[in-house]
Length: 89
Image 1 (cartoon, one colour):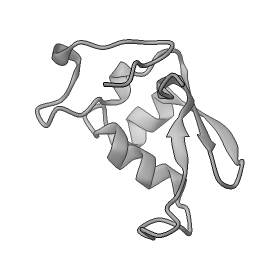
Image 2 (spheres, helix red, strand yellow; image 1 turned 45 degrees about the vertical axis):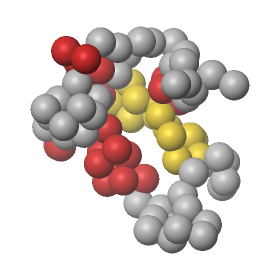
Image 3 (cartoon, helix red, strand yellow; image 1 turned 180 degrees about the horizontal axis):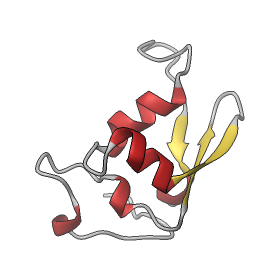
């Protein structure tokens, strides 16, 4: 299992499917970055919750806000990730 940096979670902080949700993200802003195209961005967590809800699983939220042209391309997939949840090397 890979160790998470900057924050750690318990199973009670996950939704019914086992996925983390926006309420699990630290801070007032959500920072995203891409390993492939080097795009970076910071979004208000409150605005994201207002638009998508508090219970949307983080993988689903990531797909919604990334809007990458590589989305669904298994051979050259999108490299977007939550900076606060990047696994330790």
